[in-house]
Image (cartoon, rainbow, N blue to C red; front, side):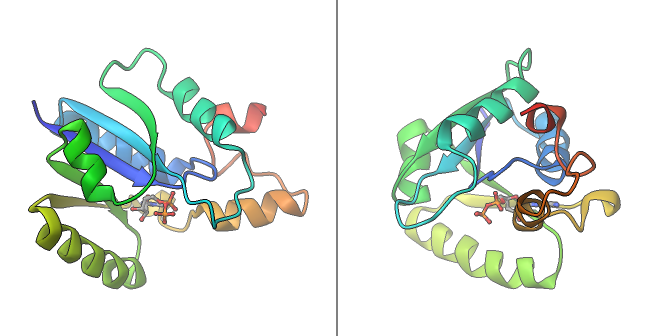
Length: 151
Ligand code: ADP
């Protein structure tokens, strides 16, 4: 089985994430959307909310699972028997950052990271800007799936 994990904070899931996940679906038998839990990090949305946003968006899609993990991403991959890590790339800054992580992960475990380039219409979207807009009372409906807007 060709299983990938898509790790991230998803605080909250955006249309940029949805674009990457939807385009990766034909490439894998199963994609685990893996929410990394870091006790030092402050989140805007609770873990339960973040899980719910993703689950609701993908209800009826049997190839998508939503899970949480702590610790090393490569150890989590081994635990769930995933051979690939999926990541999205928006710009050169993403590339530089992701390159070092992917090379480290491959050295640690042999696991390959598969990158998909963002679509042009979602390239500018980031969870941190969405949080900023939301914090100041702006309308985030153009940047996130309906499961988030509803909340
Ligand atoms: P992290 O906390 O690891 O940065 P995120 O939830 O912000 O987690 O992002 C998870 C993954 O989604 C990363 O690979 C990131 O590059 C990708 N991503 C985020 N926004 C977009 C977007 N607009 N287009 C493509 N990929 C994106």
